[in-house]
Image (cartoon, rainbow, N blue to C red; front, side, top):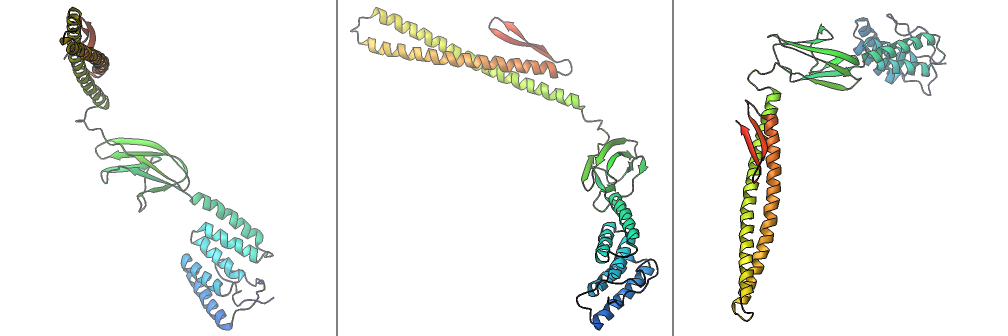
Length: 322
């Protein structure tokens, strides 16, 4: 089988000397081989200087010109040394496909297994801490001082549960636990020292309930007052209807006043019905709103505020100590 010009042995564990190459449909021209050899030698020089990423670039360019399995092996080695296990695995696998009978196949397969373990270990989850002050704080991850986060403000950590702690220069401490998943971002929201001037949440909640109670009592009182107004109108309309009915009973049917009084009687009866229903609805709404307000005032009363509903001669009344 034809051999490439690039089957020389290299120092540092690159290409293995004297490897036969698979046949190619058409050998590269002398000019192409010369350029591939130049790139190959440049890659060797960079590899010796531990410039593995740059060496991989040279080997890749040489391989593109002269696709030799030896160059593919060199490319895999340089990529592995550059800390790119997933790319190195792909190159090693391609090397075994192109040269399946190579004597170092068991060794290459062991390298692939080791790189797969390394690739899994390199896969991380991402942690960010929201609302973290820009200064005056120290971050600890799993009880150790945290390194500086990445440029995106996130820490790259192994998947699993981690303890997060933040300590401020004035002695405040905050901690939480997070569960990180591979290739996924997780955030924790930092909670600083409570503001001494701010009311406790319970007090704020109770204060809101008390305010709602007063509003409900006000609405209830307004509804009860409107109900009383319409009840008075209904009572007056009922009285007018009774007067019209009594007068009609005393008049001669041919009396010219009969038609007018009959009309007044009908209108008064309609008003009695309308105003009566309206007053009952308003009394019900007002009583419900007042009762709700009283309950909220009792639950959310502050500084000794107390309120309660009590029966009165006219229905329900609100009594309390303020």
